[in-house]
View 1 (cartoon, helix red, strand yellow):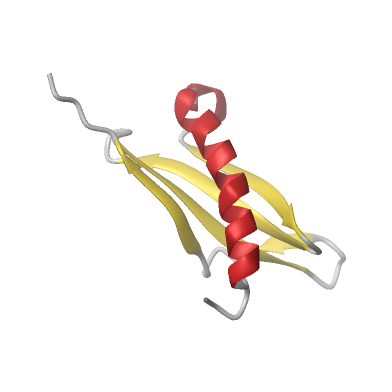
View 2: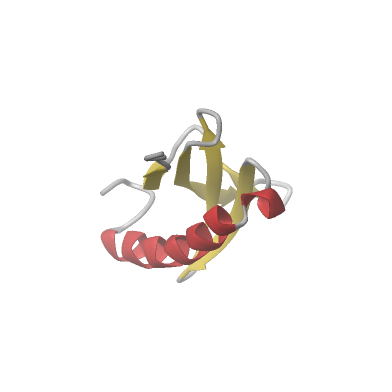
Length: 93
């Protein structure tokens, strides 16, 4: 996998991401085109980023590791990610 998420953590995170993703694509106007949410898996917190691109025809969900900075606040490492879900919308009209 990677050095910041184990396979077990990935499986649990993916299950949670699916639930959030389904709600997000059902009503994206509620969340906006770029939505961030934190998900706890065991003793770790991951940030999920759900976003629409290409005129809102492609939707992604990526996971990012977090850490506690020296001031005691949790921060997201946006330079590192793992794509969990990709969905393309097609019209067959």
